[in-house]
Image 1 (cartoon, rainbow, N blue to C red):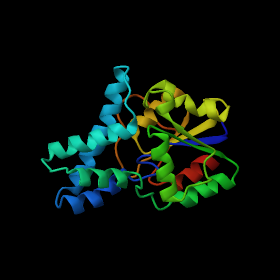
Image 2 (cartoon, rainbow, N blue to C red):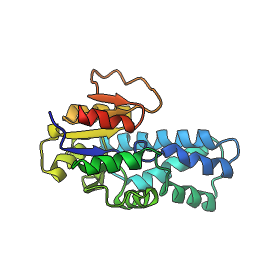
Image 3 (tube, rainbow, N blue to C red):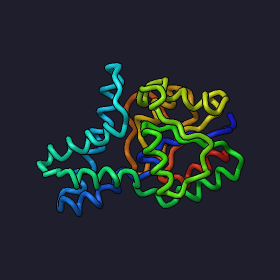
Image 4 (cartoon, rainbow, N blue to C red):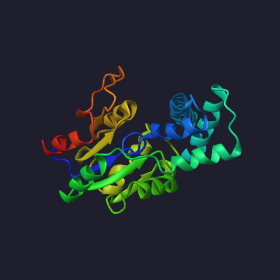
Amino acid sequence: MTIRAIAFDAYGTLFDVYSVGALAEQLFPGSGKALAEIWRVAQIDYTRILTLCGRYRNFRLLTEDGLVHACKVLKLDLTADKRQQLMDQYDRLEAFPENLEVLKALKSSGLKLAILSNGTPAMLENAMQAAGYQGLFDHVLSVDTVKKFKTAPQAYQLGPDAFGMPVTEIGFVSSNGWDVCGATWFGYQTFWVNRAGKVLDELGVQPKGEGRSLDDLLAFVAA
């Protein structure tokens, strides 16, 4: 079926969540990479725990909670100043280098584009400004409006509601395997940006397409 619109995950897909490790390494020499990795795992784990329990705390707060947890695990002295520096850096995560040209090409082809993210509206706006993505997206959708994180169906429903079309006519792009699984179950035409060459979770579901960078999405959409 023809794809008429595409919804993109933000963190890990458009913005490199591990790029914050460079600043972390400056602040905590020898621990930057580990800090970024533990931070990310905690951040996502917290979204799942809260959603499973019917509770909500916005992604900005969970991101800070994950940072505090990671520093405790690594026994790092997270001063108020270092905490603020790292949180500010999260607002301007590096964008993957190929993304801007791919997004422009998709936009020029007439496709409607959206971000569908766990991030808060303010976080997403800051990240888009830092990456130069202004004007590329028809919708910037935050789960903050439904108070449930992905992979809750209510979060994925934001896409068809915003585009005003069936979910089967919408592509969904994510670098997160769990997100691709959830979106596939929901009915999207999914594309996994598998940058690290990971193995998909054994959940009995497969994305419609897969590539090692966002460049590969262009062929998937054109097929």
